[in-house]
Image (tube, rainbow, N blue to C red):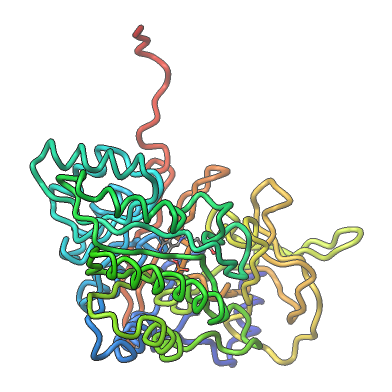
Length: 428
Ligand code: LLP
């Protein structure tokens, strides 16, 4: 009943389209919650960065963790983009999607021996190594296989990326990378590493970075170190400048760092460097291309606050609960006749943390209204869970007036797959 009222109320108003696809019709067809991504928007981000990098021997290695759907990875592959991976699962996805192993680099503090072996077997381009123990383990694993592991040391430059503490990685208190002093010792002892080719530097100071200053600082430290190493007879063939470029989460904010300015800063910092350059952007390539389509379930008037209860929750998009992150949330059909009000926008999960926004000013909603949570292309679906036994949402790619489902909505049977009653008791 209410749904009819809501939809007829909107009947004459134009809805939002993304990449030529009408979102009202899309949500009717595929249901909600629904993660939707514009392929054109992703391609134009890739283009922007590739254009800025022209003339450099540079490879963009997309940080697969931002959105690891194989269709997104395929899009990267067809644009000539490689991948930055952090697990065997990501390696498998990337190869499956057609990203050549020579464009895959492996980062992360906790690579297991099996993961190292698997990556060596397929001949990935490079390991970004984050601790001495990892270096020695990789040497052992590579020696056993009679293969050479190409390695960059991840430098922790002790720079504050001026971002949220949970996504800041370049300060010495963080678990990532090693100090320049330690890296210096690795190079000095390089001859002892028979199956490791230590000839690269890597730095990644954090995510959602909105100012060039921390990049400049970190790159300057890396550049000084590269010059020192070269002067001491240690050639550096690869410098990986990481990812972290921020995106616009609020429409009213200024646009963040432009690709051209970012690359210009890299060119300045690494002036004179002749080896290859690697970049690991994740969010920058996909975040703004995505929205999470969701419907209002109901309005609940509390004693103190008014709640807009959606059919999506923290299991579909964790960022607001985890980092208090802001996402614009707007109706897909804007009805100027509705008055403005304020809502706490929440999901159905049984936690107070399941809140997308507090006291958000917006037009009044009614049940069944279609809304979109914006800028969810990165770290949305890839961080989703089935918490509260809510099946994973569907994902769809939009491209110039057409759409393709790239993950069908999980059903409850699929959600329980792999679980079983405790029937076959065994002893170790
Ligand atoms: N390279 C390395 C080694 C990384 O750890 C990351 C992200 C990236 C590249 C890509 O960073 P990006 O360009 O996407 O900023 N879940 C958080 C973000 C965690 C980022 C983890 N590492 C969020 O939703 O904000």
